[in-house]
Image 1 (cartoon, rainbow, N blue to C red):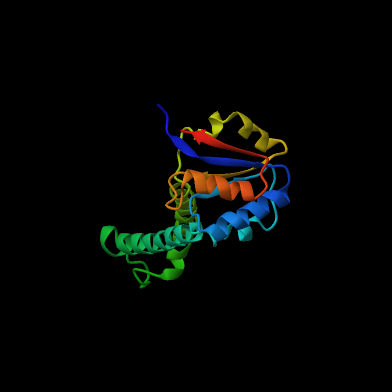
Image 2: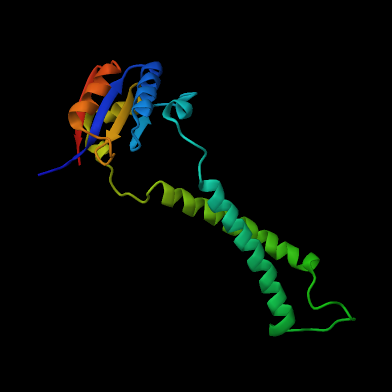
Length: 176
């Protein structure tokens, strides 16, 4: 026995999908998404999406990389292998900058990648929408809005009524 993943509504135009997204956003749903064959200008605003948190992951990775580089050079020059040359200081931020800079870029990129994977709940080896026969039309000319059953406001009858009020010609239940 399979469980329901959510309700999917199909639209023929980007304007129809955007209108539906605004209605679903205003109804207070949180676990839902819109799938389109091409980027639709203004869809983020229609869905009520805020700025991505991936930048914070990248920033924290970069700060960690820079700090690690500076501490690594300081430790190596001060304790691990100190070499006195011509009265120069044991640590100089100028000479430690190139490795710190490289670690900033490396760990910043790892932070961005890790943040994206965490926030998108990846890797997910299979998605229930891939079993839905009509969903393959999203790569051609159809627009889909899916409300998940995991949403706290989800009630099958009320959600179906809401999607019917958006003018969707086809509304179906998606099985897990």
